[in-house]
Image 1 (cartoon, rainbow, N blue to C red):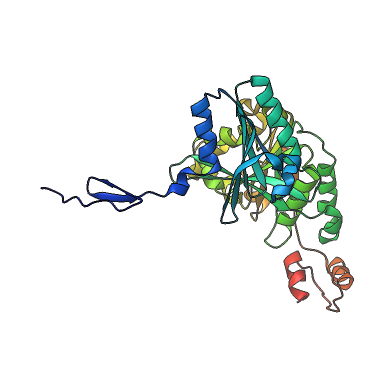
Image 2 (cartoon, rainbow, N blue to C red):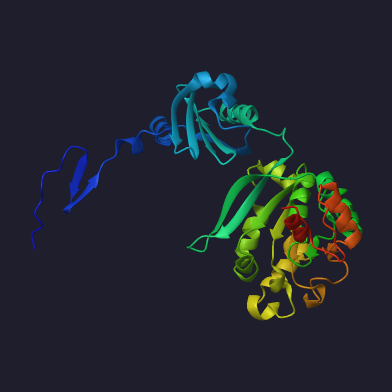
Length: 355
């Protein structure tokens, strides 16, 4: 069967009877310029950094703005900048969601790495301790782990302290005193919904930011019950830091509302996944890795698998409960409410009473 061929219009290519519109702008982006330079001039040395950044505008480049050769703004979601230092030295900067990936390419090894490091220092931001980098993990449709790096605003513990009973306050302050990954690496927080576990978690991430990176598992059931490579990918991910810096820092893997994966019936649903996860905290899998695991759950402690809560494994086991009527009324009065309670209440119930 002969397929009739028609002349291609300007800007189109004809092939096998299917017309594909040629969009010139696809090949005229900073990313395309960068890779054409690498291949065209045989720039054999490449240095790469991925760091948290101080802003979104071109001003964060400082004096490097004068080297700007090409730029792209993709719907306000991603920016790309190409800097030309000289004929044989270029840098590509891609900015997305509070992070910058910096790639410098050239013909001299030392110059390439020094230039990349200088630009990384220029655009990096370590000043605002309220903004915490966190990596969200999920398996993509092809079953490959995917890391999504974001920056979240976090509260100070001083502003949250009166939301909790004495047991939680003392437990949190023991955690805040840490400065490195301890021998015990399992953290288990349990309590009914609305008792403030997530707010406490965000405050913990802020306090630990100087020495610990956070990895939040959006699909804990796959993380626990899936391939062991998922666990290793998360444990070994650099999180936008140099390899040396990443090795020195600790990591907190967060499984929120994952109590059903830690119960006595968990082996039936997750197979060997629970055993691998626990082995990461105090077994051979965790040797040489500064990794802690924090699990939050609405399940009662008695429902947990004995292996999860055995002595020597838990760094912290805390129950987030209701506030007594006395403390709840004091909490309401400090926030301008005249409501009066005669029985304990959850934090969520108190906030709902403020209107």
